[in-house]
Structure formats: C-alpha cells, structure tokens
Amino acid sequence: MYHEGDVVTWRPCYSAPTAPEAHLVKGFLEDRGVPCLLSGDPASMYPLPAFGAVVDVLVPEDWWPVARKLVTGRDGRRRPAMRVVPLPLRRRRG
Image (cartoon, rainbow, N blue to C red; front, side, top):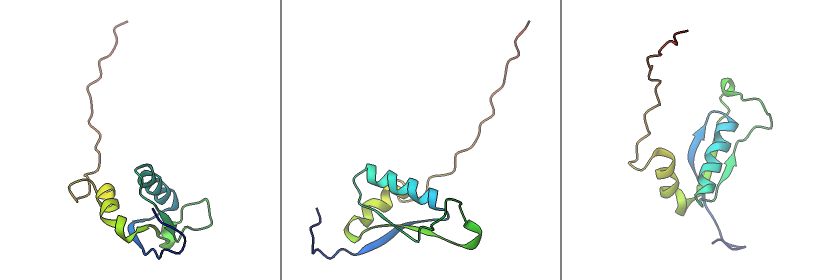
C-alpha cells in the first residue's frame, strides 16, 4: 500500500462535532479497509461541541472518493434520519 518515503496527501472526508463521533466514523472506515487519521482530536474525554472543536477524519487523497461514498451513502446523499414508529400495544387480560 504505502511505503516509507511515499508522500501522502491527507484530505478530510468527514467533520464530526465531537471526538466520539469522529472515532466511530474512523472505525467504520477502517473496518472497510480505508486508512484514516484524526485531526483536531481534543485531549479530553468530555465532548465539547459548544466551543466549536471539530474533529476531522482524514483519508489519503486517492481514497477520498471511496470514503465519501461510504460516509454519505452509496447514492452520494446523506441518509435520512431514523424515525420512531409507534406501535399499538395490547394490554394483557388478567
């Protein structure tokens, strides 16, 4: 893949508002074989989105199209948020 001395240009493929979210995306991409780094990961275990600390998930330039497709979905758009569907509950007779 990459060898010592190779010049690799890293490009952000995802910006997360918190470090835990960035780690989840990084793990998701690494499980699919995409090499990743995190940039701007704060040295705190507490999420600090109020201060605008964004954590970028970086991938090599040549992996960027693949990583973007994986992160945004196969059709290139973000998937809609999941929604809760209420189900009717039956009460037990007793």
